[in-house]
Image 1 (cartoon, helix red, strand yellow):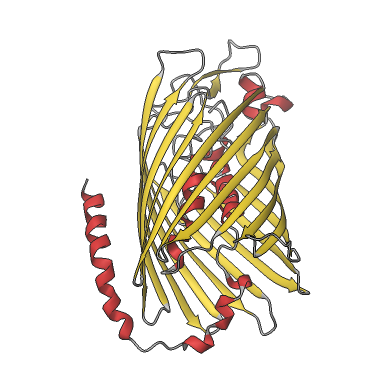
Image 2 (cartoon, rainbow over the protein chains, first blue to last red):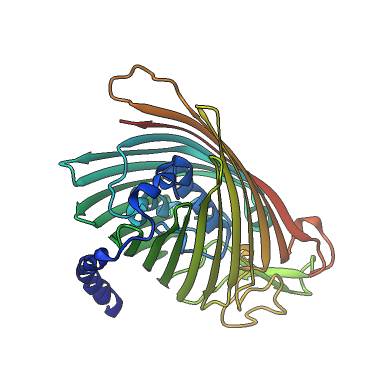
Length: 76
Length: 381
């Protein structure tokens, strides 16, 4: 039960870190148009991307750290 | 959850789909609807079915989504034909999620339920993400709790439980006007009945005509894994992008794995986006895995699941997205049709194909090719 408690604490503390937002951004807002282009989206199609991640998880021993949810696979 | 059909059960997927925006920073996901047909075909296993997702924002700072997924499984995998009979079955799952935006902080909660005739899984998740440093940085973390019930066909007295917990940390960083990178770290703990009630291990048995016999597999009751991944995406001097990634993995069962992936995305004309990718994966075997144990009850824990063996695979991917001309639908402002095809080649280094015959332990090593097809329509409204 210790880890969930720590996570809850982190959940409460994380918004406070917004105070760091006064750091001068080294990439100006007007230099970020490339990241608005759909070809730079980390996960353009959530349904298709999640399905492929599941194919990997079901056929491989490794799991997690894919940038999306893990969870019950029922694939033991 | 029958013998050897790891590909089928998809409890994870609903939660993954509905909450995958959590690491994208303090921007609510687009209002969209997706309808996909998916098919996996390889190793004697065919799984196909529909997948649906609908997302909608409301009151400016909230978003809700729902997903539905279905698998129709036809399995005659090597596990099945070695020790059981081919089978067909279905499984369904649903998920709901709710996102709330407060300043530069996004909160997401989700719930998913997967159900099949011998396995039920519930998963609840919480994710929080926060933009920092002039929105160049997004940090995120999440927690999932899962409760699974494992049953066994033909044995009404069999009723086991699995408790699952996922702890996630993420960091997304804009490094230059053309380069962004993402770090992910995840710990997963499982506790309960973690093996497959139908699967068997084989052991040398001179009294058997073929020289070996089978007994049920026995797994540890706990498993904890650590995984860390890094991905980077770069905008090329012309309008196209490349991306690459690496993931390191280790767990308490003794499996170590490495994953490397690269990809290229290229718009073509005003309507098309084409992409291609390559992925390499390899892993070492679990400490208690063996293709052929020296005798019955040779050790405390026994596994012959090929997903716990030493193997590698390679995947080639191709995809095309076509943006449809205005459909004239009042509520749909943009829509695409998409086709993605992936070819995966699996090569096992200590899992043998007993269907090919040969002296015990000297059968040819197993391998197979699989094709994954995803065809879907997306509409933004």
